[in-house]
Length: 92
Image 1 (spheres, rainbow, N blue to C red):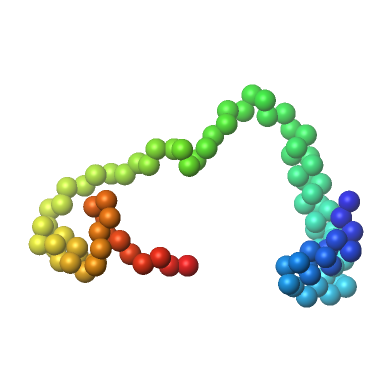
Image 2: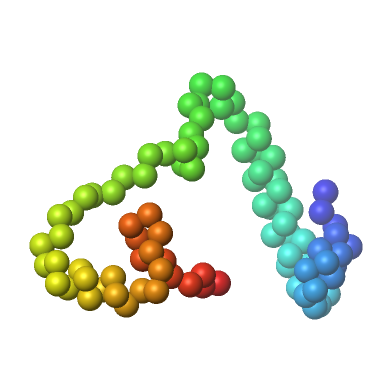
């Protein structure tokens, strides 16, 4: 069972300031959430087929390049290419 002390500890671990009023609100919300998770855990999923989206085949529509001049200009804008694709900087 989630207690107010648990909420305060979670806030501290997340480096969040949690007021007493917020702790009361979050306590109720977390109890409801974990109750819902407990209800879901009770559901029989033996007949449900497992899926894994990361193993799904990547589908891509191959399109013929019709404007070779424009394609060459676009490719020239990128310093590097990898597997036939323009390589861009990592953005986070």
